[in-house]
Length: 55
Image 1 (tube, rainbow, N blue to C red):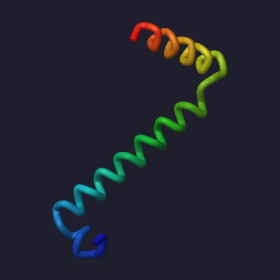
Image 2: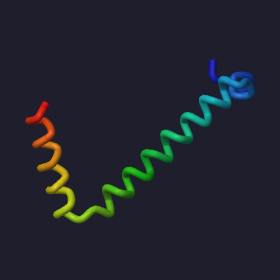
Image 3: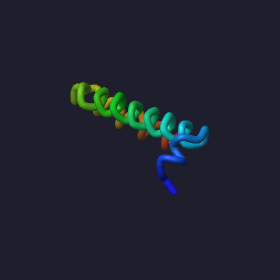
C-alpha cells in the first residue's frame, strides 16, 4: 500500500506533508514542556482543573 508509487502521487505527497507537520508540532510542544519551570507547570495544572469544573 505504501510504496514508491503511492508517495509519488498527490495523495502520497499530502500524506508526507501531514506526517512532517505532526512530527514538527510534537517536537515544538515537547521542547516547550521540557523548558517549563515547575511553577509554570503547577499553574497550568491548576488552570486546567478549574476549566474542568466549569464544564
